[in-house]
Image (tube, rainbow, N blue to C red; front, side, top):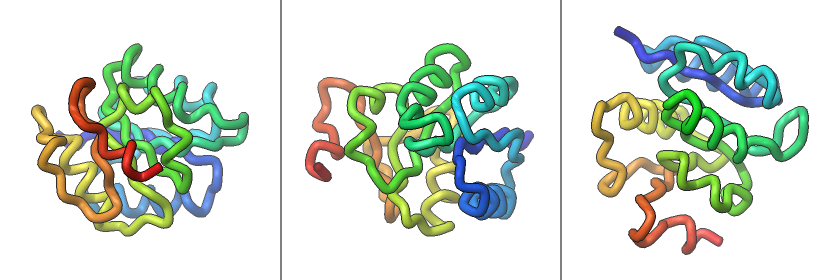
Length: 144
C-alpha cells in the first residue's frame, strides 16, 4: 500500500514540483495545502507531511508540523529555505530538507519516513538534516 503524502506549501509551482517528485517516487499525494486550516483538513488518512514554514497565513508551518504529528500521528518533514525558524517544533519532525531542494533529497527522505522504524540517526541524504531525539546532539544547532 502506498503511503499518502500531504504537501503544505503556498507557492503553487513549488507545490506542483513536489507533487511530481512524490508521485515519481511511488507515493500518493492526498492533498496540497497553502495554510493551517487546509493542512489540518487535509491531514485525514495521511502518513507523511512535507511542510514549508512560511505559508499563506504567515509563519505557521512549525505549529502545523507539531499539530500534524501530535494530533494525527503523521511523520513530518519540513521543507524550507529557513531551517533556523523551526526552533522547538523540531521535536515533532523527522528532519528538514533545505530549499532549494533536489528531487533525490525529497524521494530519499520520503522513503526513510515510510519505514516503520526509520533510522534517523544514520540518515545520509544530501540536503536533508535529521532531527535527533531529545538528549542527542541535534544537527540543526550547527546549521544556525
